[in-house]
Amino acid sequence: MASIIMVHTEHTARLDSRPAAHPRRPACLPLRLPAVESMSLHQAIRACHESLNLQTMTIDYLKKILTSRVYDVAHETPLDLAPTLSKRYQNQIYFKREDMQDVFSFKVRGAYNKMANLSDAQLKRGVICASAGNHAQGVALSASKLGCRALIVMPTTTPPLKIESVRARGGPNVEIVLHGDSYTDAFNHAQLLEKEQKLTFVHPFDDPDVIAGQGTIAMEILRQHSGPIHAIFVAIGGGGLISGVAAYVKQLRPDIKIIGVQTMDSDAMARSLKAGERVTLPDVGLFSDGTAVRLVGQETFRLAQQFVDEVIIVDTDAICAAIKDVFTDTRSILEPAGALAVAGAKAYIERAELTKNPVKNETLVTIACGANMNFDRLRFVAERAELGESREAVFAVSMPEQRGSFKRFCGLVGPRNVTEFNYRISDQDTAHVFVGVQISDRGESGSVARKFEENGFRTLDLTHDELAKSHLRHLVGGKSALAKDEILYRFEFPERPGALMRFLDSMAPNWNISLCHYRSQGGDVGRILIGLQVPPEEMDEFARFLATLGYRYWDESQNPVYKLFL
Ligand SMILES: Cc1ncc(COP(=O)(O)O)c(C=O)c1O
Image (cartoon, rainbow, N blue to C red; front, side):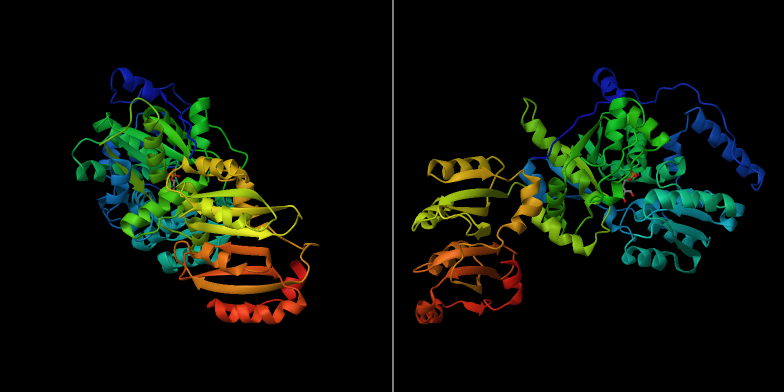
């Protein structure tokens, strides 16, 4: 189950007693005025006004959001009801479809609003940003729309696909500079170039114009759904998106909870809110790369402190499951950061279910904020989605190395689908099998394990064991001194419920199975590797057995890879 950390903020405490629509005025900061030499008088006054406002913390975000200029490049995206997820979780769950923007994320809103508010002189000199992802695409598209030069600094490790899509969005307006190994390297270099070339820095989150641009999402949500809303769930990286959304919603509908969602390994905002000051993480996880931020913004932290009700933390498996949920309802695939809000909403409902106040028949809005998914991640996502949903349980089962014990074990698995079966002979007395089975709810792995145990099969439930899920499942096996007279065959059989067990059953009439590797791939055929101990004098009989088996097969006994590793 996804673990949850609740971080209550000042705002939650206030909401408990009396909703407060306006932020409190915190202590003043030392004042700094912006460089105004290249601006018109009007722009200089506006810039000074904004700078003063920011520093005395009185920015009117409601006005800023209502007057944001985003629709030159952004679409008003649909607010779609997710019928399947809603039914499963007995609430009305909506997806705000920011994955449908031309750049496949909301980021273009903030970037464009920032850039469209620059002076002609600033636009003429150009802008700069550091980003390896969605922000870069937003800046590139905005630059091409506004006809201004944009320098985009990306780490050298950025995948070519992302570099190409930034280039495609920006066309001749965009120059890409590859620098350093990490985002921080790229960011530092961008700051250097900003000064050298007198460019304007377009920050990915910590800028009132960027925050206001992202806040237009909230404006659309409240317009699109005028009825009651229990909560809006928002992914947090640096905090620009949630700050904009929260600042708008809490002014107009303070009864709506604003709930942030972060990953376990990139939870800078949750930690900062808990500590009451910004906390820098030593490093961040990269699975949800859109939200991998070590230090949240100054302004975004201030707004989150005032307006965000709580932050929920979810794990990678829960994100993968949420990607699958969104796919089920929309046939669209979100990137991990894009599905965070959905994972958070599910965790929120599940947590409430354990209390006396379950959340039922409420309206929950989740911001599906991005779909820039690397195609090569899909295999991992599909694999982990089942675990995140608790649809697959994995076990290490020990069974006596004697005839009949495997059949007995199959009987206990019953009609459940076997998703994985790995075995290598290693012990004369006991066989250790890594087995995955499909389950229907999260409590079931424990009861399946108990059933195995009660019937004499020592069992370890590995469903929540990261080492087992990521590595050991692929490492079961190796060379064995006990695999005398072993031959190795690959088989294919039609993939359908119960087919694996039937296949394994038909395999062992006379000969000992010394190796077995099977993983359900969701394809039309199941592919399985089997080692059998067949003495040379029984090979004719084995050939006759193969001929009657009725499955496609390949003899891999002479494969050099087999000789090397098994
Ligand atoms: C898809 C996606 N979701 C969420 C975020 C986090 O936004 P913020 O940094 O404003 O919190 C980002 C940031 O780039 C993103 O690309």
